[in-house]
Image 1 (cartoon, protein in one colour):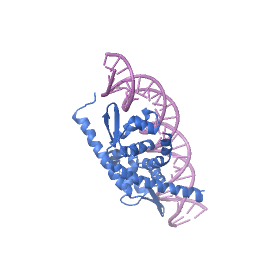
Image 2: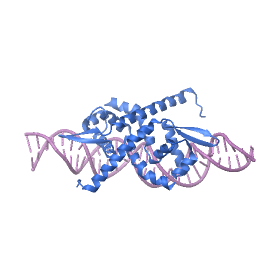
Image 3: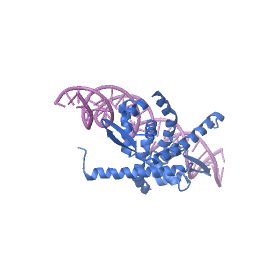
Image 4: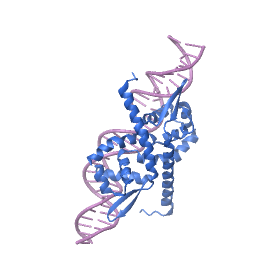
Length: 115
Length: 115
DNA sequence: TGGCTATTTGGCAAAATAGGCAAATAGATG
DNA sequence: CATCTATTTGCCTATTTTGCCAAATAGCCA
């Protein structure tokens, strides 16, 4: 069991960092945008609608996880997706989330089986 | 831009729920175990080494996200992975996390380029 | 150099998450 | 029904994450 504790502290812990980076609606939306083309911070900020400092922090979470990279062009910093395989992953997540949503609707609308 | 805000509140928000469920070392470790076979709570608890109530809460996060399902057998509850595609996804995450780790080691050991 | 634009960082308060203990619940079984 | 085992829930505290504002940086250009 301490065995497993150690394991958690290495492989799973590191992987969780990457997954955590994806675990926020704003960051998912950013990843979605970046999957289409590289975009600069100011454009992302416009699309998201939060304060630019907030967006910048989200971007730095993505960068630290290793999911994205940056390129400077003049004054602007462009972010780009580093690992396209993330997109397949996103398909899988989309599937799970759609199924889950449908099931929740069923549970709510059909009959409150829980007292 | 409010457009995007709305989008965040629906699709990306729901997907983030699923990803958040995966974004914890303990839960990743549970998913890894479940990928091999269905296991009951008490066995998972033994492997993880946390309090059973803690493990139970992690399991309920996974269940609410739609990633796992349960089956009762006698008075034990077995958890099982609902969506095998998660495993392919994990390969991708593993790749990103390994690359990120290597790069961090490079940054630290070779030369502190940041002042 | 000095001012300009784009971006990041620091500090802080609010909200969300994690983990342990004790109590509650759900079936199984005598 | 009483009790036992397996699991979940409630409550509480500690930690982490978010998001905003103000201030600091970084490169560009006159």
